[in-house]
Amino acid sequence: MKPKTVLLTVLGAIGLVVLPTNRPLQANPMESKSAIAPSANELLLAQEPSTDIYQQAKEELSGDFYVLYRIIERVARANGLDERPWRITIVPTYDINAFATEVNLIAMHTGIMDQLAGDASALACIVAHEMGHHVERHIALGPAEKVALIEEIEAEAQEQVEAELKDAKSDARGSAIGGAVVRGVLGGTIGRAGGRALENESRQRMNRAEERVREIVEQKEQELEERLAEDSQRREFEADRSGYMYSVQAGFEAEGCLRAMEVLARTPGAEFDTTHPATRRRIEALEELAVEHPPAKLSQKGDALISATQPLTYDLSQDGVSLRINSVRGGSTGDNLEEMFD
Ligand SMILES: [Zn+2]
Image 1 (cartoon, rainbow, N blue to C red):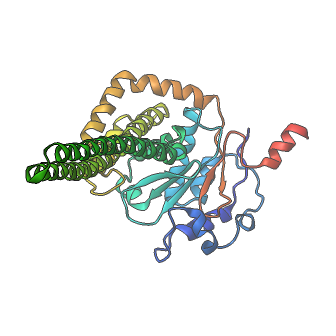
Image 2 (image 1 turned 30 degrees about the vertical axis):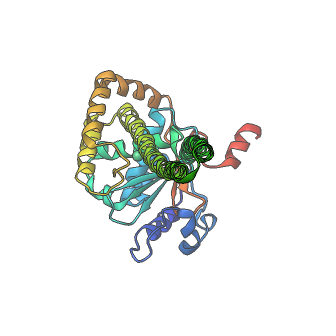
Image 3 (image 1 turned 180 degrees about the horizontal axis):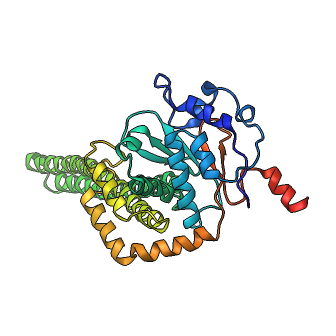
């Protein structure tokens, strides 16, 4: 398949979107669609297919978009991840952050682009980490898994609370009956005193039960928080693994991941916050991975896949703000129809 259609006007649109600092992009580019103006269609004018899509990209795209296009294009082809389009958006705030959202959309803050400037391998590892979140379906399944976990722990708490209250009630009934028996048998002052003592005991038993219920609820809330954090950390380890595997298979340096990790480790409150595992553990996991999957072997596999494919084209996304990196089928459904049916 030959590289196709990209329009010089795309550059203008993207530059316009990305540069203004007084109008920050939303995390969700769809939200800022109307503010950004002309529709994608107005900007897309037919052009002659380029013989060198990379050269064209370099001329048309802003520096950051060019870099991200080249990285994603290469990572996708080297890993067989070119069956679906990817999208990139750049968030013009100086955060050392990147995130994955919507379907195959990768958002990069300008801060991380700046901090990793000149280090394509480190940036490729971050981008591949975000691609991993998509491939592992963390974005699609994450919220549902969270709800399921909350429901599971709520049900457990409910069960424990009910068991506690049932015990307390049967004890209380036992004490009340005991009180009546004591009064009936002994009668008089001593009997009444004995009955009161048992009633006090049953009240205390209920108070203790209430206390226990509070403890159960607190303990379960803590357990929920811990398990949510564990899930989140497990997903990050999975995405780190993808970051290494995908970027190295695409021919980037394995040390790029370590260099990216070092930058993140020195960034308080970046993506890698309390829900993320400690950087030291993440670096250890990457080192183990490099032993298990030597870089030379991975990049050889990636080279074979890249030589069997054609460069992926790009277009301004229909959302009007992100760059779409087309799948192996290209960016035009019309062309695809014509190829099939003339
Ligand atoms: Zn992540």
